[in-house]
Length: 356
Image (cartoon, rainbow, N blue to C red; front, side, top):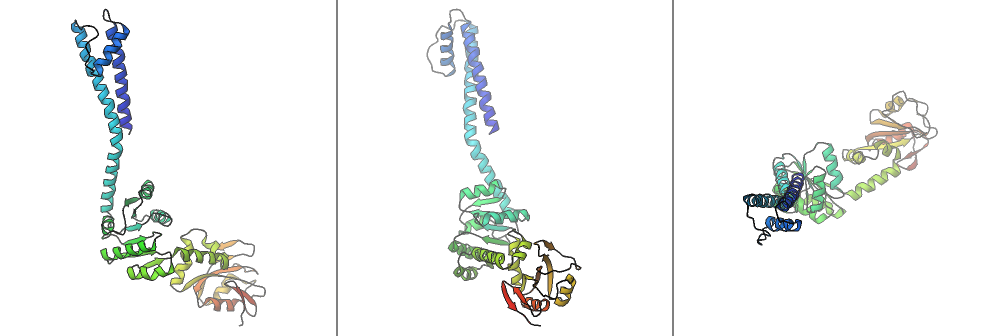
C-alpha cells in the first residue's frame, strides 16, 4: 500500500506543477490572458479536442504545447495507475499470502490439525503455540480464520467434514487431529472422515452430551473430552479439595492433573489433621514412614493458610494443617487411618470415625 500512495502523491505533484507551468507559459505569450491560458491548459491536457484559443504561430508555442500534453497526460495516467494499484494490491497480497500458507501447510509433517477455532479451539491453539507444536487450524468461518492468521497461526477456511479439506490440511501426514466444534454431529462426522483418510492418526474429539461419547469412540476417536464434565469436576475439587486446588492454581493445564492421575489409578487429595491426631507435633518424615511408601506428600497447607510446596522432611505438623498427597485411590483411606487414630477425620468432605 505504501508504494501505491507514493505513486499517487508523486503523480499529483507532477500534474499540479505541469498545470501551473503551462498556465504561466501561455500567459506570457503575446495576447494571451490568464483565462485563455487556463482554458488552453485544460483542453490540451485532457484531450478535449477543441480548437486553440489563439493560433500557435510560433515554433516555441508548438513545442511548449507538446511538452504540456506529454507531461500532463503522463502524470494523469500515473495517478490513475496508483489508484488501480491500491485496489488490486490488497487482493494480490492476499493471494500471495494464501499461496505461501498453502505451501507451509504442504510442508507440515507430524503436525496437529485443530478443527474449530471457537471457545475451545482458541485457548487450545494458544497452548499448542506456547509448547512449540506445529499445527494448522481448520474452520468454516472466514472471520475466525482471519483471527487465527492475525495471531500468527497457520489456518485455512473450509468444512472439516469434507475429505478435500482434511486432505488439504495434511491429514495423511498429521500425527493427531482435535475436533473441538460445539456441534456433536459434526465432531462425529469429522472423526469418521479423518479415521477413513488416515487409520493411524490419533483423534481427540469434543463431546457436549454424554450420549455422544460412545458414538465418537465408534467413529474412531481415541479420546473424548467432555468440557461440561471437566467443569463439574473442577467445581467439585474447589468444594471438596480446596488445598489441592490452591496447589494446582488456576492454570487450565494444571486443572486437568487430577483427571490424568485418576486414569492411572492415582489421586491427588488432601487430609486435615484434626484434634488428637498422633502426627500433631511430629515431623513430616513421620507421616511418610507410616505411609510405607504408598503415597507422596507434595505440599502442606498450614493452619494459617500458608501453602508450602515440596515441604522439608523436618517440618513440624500442627493441628489444622492439611497434607496434600498423591497416592493410589485405594491406599488413601488407609493412610487416613494411620495418621488419625480413634478420632474424627475429615476425608473428602465427610467426617468419619476411624479405628486403629
